[in-house]
Length: 220
Image 1: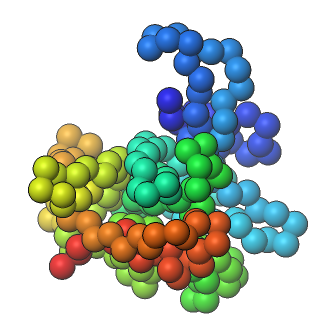
Image 2: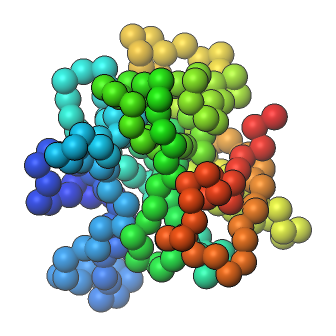
């Protein structure tokens, strides 16, 4: 089963999504979990230090990163994971979507070059393109006028075949006091999804610009 846990063997504290083998419906196997989707660390070149994954919105010295609430679906032999990152009681909480060619991954995040340092990166570099986000007006899929801090996503198909994204968030009229929302006023949302997943194409061979069009949210 996929679950969010504190990752072992990394230099800074991180939470990521792993798959854990079950002996039964109530008992975990003792084997090591398989990492499905985890935050990116800064490498020697400075790349893959996605500040959008910082738990503190890149506004403090904390380097803790978090990816959570992974929900998986399968589409014509490809697998997608809808997930959340950031602190749920702030505008920095957001919905991401990652893709894989196999159930256990590796799952590929959708990236775009951040030439304007919009997600608070120290220099121009690749950054994650989220399905829904309400913290950066200059970055794709900004939905602050519709919902704030979207997260905890699930993809749900209606009997007629239409797909929707179910998630939680805060109404645009809600004010974040001291940068923090009151979780008691968080509410459920549903947003229609549009699919354009090509046949006979692998995730690994698909460019980010194309992968970003496979699932999009109807934000108008």
